[in-house]
Length: 180
Ligand SMILES: [Zn+2]
Ligand SMILES: [Zn+2]
Image: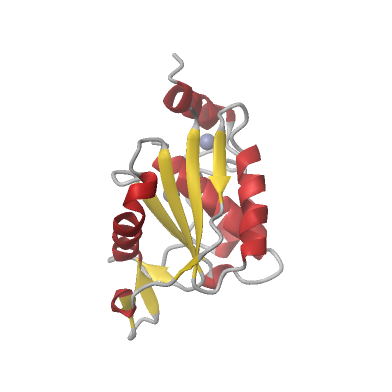
């Protein structure tokens, strides 16, 4: 069996966008049987993860929260969870993050507040695919078009593509299909 990724709306996120992102994201894993599932419910985050001075969520705490809450659904291996959060996020030491993956618990979160604009859906797609790549063991990539390229600004996010380069795809194959 392949990989199943629960794509959960957290807060002000349209299920219409998430459904589009899910279909598009699946195409980024050709032949790998990676499916993105969008639950019908929405999640809300406890206020205790919100830093009122920064007006941001602590992404590390959010990932831990999502893991605790969804553990029964994701614990059989090969199930992952990506929460798409309609707010801004940070980790200690960084002003903000577009997303944060915690591969050790199979959970990532994506923060859309800084991605708003006509390219919102495409940006969310790129970050969802990127963080899922991390959850499957990929690191950052130096290929300028590869979705695994690190991006720290909207310009960098818009410049890179939404697909894996051949090298990253080959690594994914080894991880997911156990080839080579
Ligand atoms: Zn990254
Ligand atoms: Zn790459």
